[in-house]
Length: 179
Image (cartoon, rainbow, N blue to C red; front, top):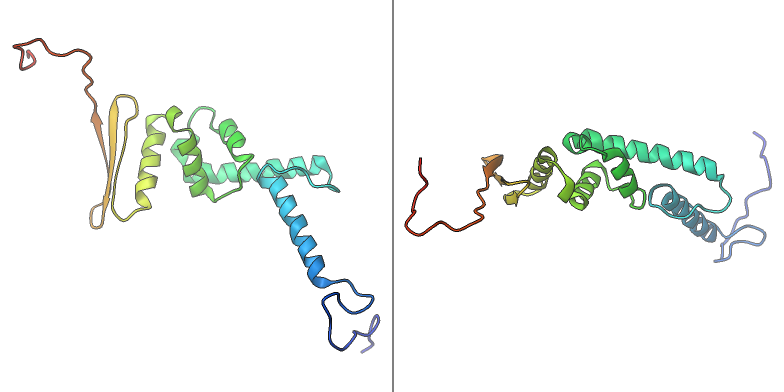
């Protein structure tokens, strides 16, 4: 076998490296910083790093966002069926690092809870209950009370009640509704 290139220096290597060779730790630190900058630009709304093709970064950013959107849609079907979900999620996720489809869906649903329909609210309530051993969680979408109960042996149950909101007090002497 024939050796290719200069022989490897033998002996102690100081903090700056042997004469003529780059400092490996400094190079690793620079590489880690450049990778973190690129990752932030692709998935967390960071600025585009110097030296990269902006069009290629935009295409890659969009592909990663579409992959993230598809993962959330698989994990949260009722949430994904909400009107305008794709556009709202894209705007929401563009400036946040990915946390996984479950956590991304929880964060998005929590941030947009007021505009969710009943099915998405039920899905959110069940998902929140599933992360606890014991849970009693409630939500009130549109005149209904949703209550999720979770306990060992019982599993998770979702109860729905119609809320009766009285707008005016009863007249004196009328204790019951006429039937």
